[in-house]
Length: 84
Image (cartoon, rainbow, N blue to C red):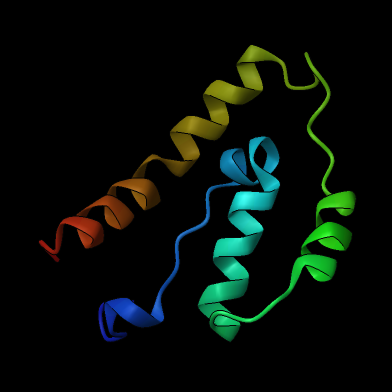
């Protein structure tokens, strides 16, 4: 990603997609296609998104996941700051 111009990259957080699917999907659609009417597609795509079930992940697995992702997330954060 360091070689790709910032305007050619979009970051989408899973948490945002699950909690605010219309806003996130509209942002992705505009990134890909520009300012065109895509409300039908956004509606269809939103219908496919299912929030994770409460209590689905146990705390131990969340901790393992956080540790496994830490290095990659740090790298992405440094890219956002432009320090890499």
